[in-house]
Length: 97
Image 1 (cartoon, rainbow, N blue to C red):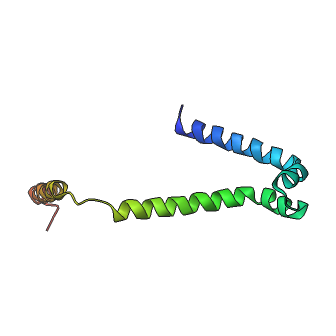
Image 2: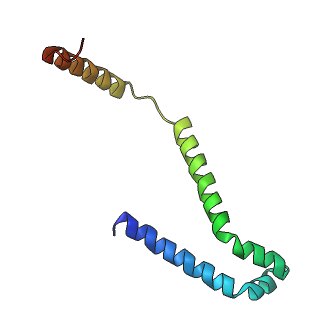
């Protein structure tokens, strides 16, 4: 499956679950032992909570990966070599001053 198809499938599944929850607010309130008003707010804003949770997860995972990124001296040396090679090629063509 292509990536957009996977996201579309998850999106349709989440929308179906949310739609079912919207139809069953009273039963959800009874099962959780909360008032209908609380269940209504929780179900109505469920997509917002999910998006916020996904955003927090994204920020935390990016911050963690940046904080734990290892240095790679070999890659730095290769990039330096490529920059020198590119500068030499530009000098040869008369593009670089």
